[in-house]
Length: 130
Image 1 (cartoon, rainbow, N blue to C red):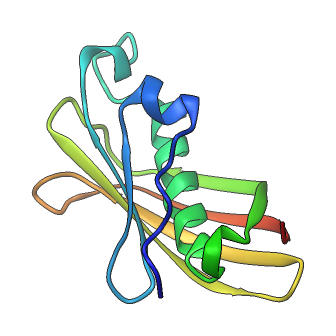
Image 2: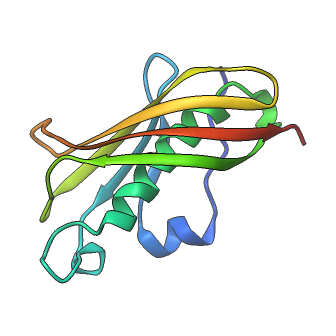
């Protein structure tokens, strides 16, 4: 599979995450946690956690489409928050779990630098080809 085109979205630049193709058809999204990513309790904000899981799922799905012939939107995103992160780098790893031509299903796990699970998520994407 060819390398992913760079993610040049405004949200990526604003939030500072990095997306890449992982091993075994995985999608990866990493973020070095800064003060701007924390909630009022000093923990990684749940919206940021959700964004990372969603992005990792989307990258995994995007890998199936050569030449960036993919346009997909999230239909559902279910997140399970396990524990909070306060700093360091977190990594979401997504993988496809099923689907057909117009819908794809994926799941992702967010871990801290020590490998502890911070959150899990599952998503459904509606697919159209460019």
